[in-house]
Image (cartoon, rainbow, N blue to C red; front, side):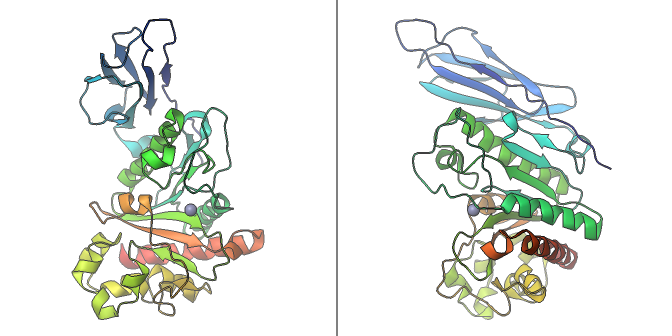
Length: 364
Ligand SMILES: [Zn+2]
């Protein structure tokens, strides 16, 4: 069953420009999800003055937290204004699974961020594949701006292949903004570079991942990327450095290593040695390799050797189980050869779906 719905975003932007002596504060107020925000006093305000925001959730939704340049869950929230302030109220359904139905399409403001809910314990996010470059968002002045080509296509095809082979969908969260506008695999400061609307999109991307994780409960999170060089192997990142992976299995199996990995929860819950989860035959790298895709780490390639290696970025750090939670995480850096050519990509998408399904069946 395919259910299509468009998430209503109660978005109110207040930017006072009338002429007072001092420059008024620039205040951007947004809501993610179904709810509204009231601002008091409802007048032009200046830096140093106090302001109170009240978040009012729509029926069936609850106020979750403040984000942007404010934080916490106090409601109402009173604070002292700075020169420019982005205030985001995050609302979440009381029962997310009843709102975000599998196979539906949900979008944030201006469709920069997309969420396709699933019904399997797997969340795939795609932060770097976007090509939207709206004029309303400033270019990021520094940092990496290279797009990961054809990863959105790969993510969609892998999700569809998963459904086709196993009759169930992973959750899929996509950033459609080009990395010049937003880096959705960095913290909010570097990722949005101070742009209010990029910061809103950053929060929408994160919130959809959090919603998907809440629906999943216990399972796996995969942050999907593409390598820009001529790398020969698929790379899987578990927050373990190339140096860590050069260790012997016995060293890797020490709890001090697994506890700084994005598979920390799985390592705790599983009776098999940690090295098997990372590079055994039934690790994701091992499963991909058995399907014909050289991967690192894996039984054949236990460490990356001298090639540049991606051990996992912001999303893997935040959404894997290193710090807390029931969802383990990993970053996949797919090679160019499995992305740019449509026929090769379709084959890889089907193999990736199979490897992920077998990984989940083995360990969850
Ligand atoms: Zn990337």
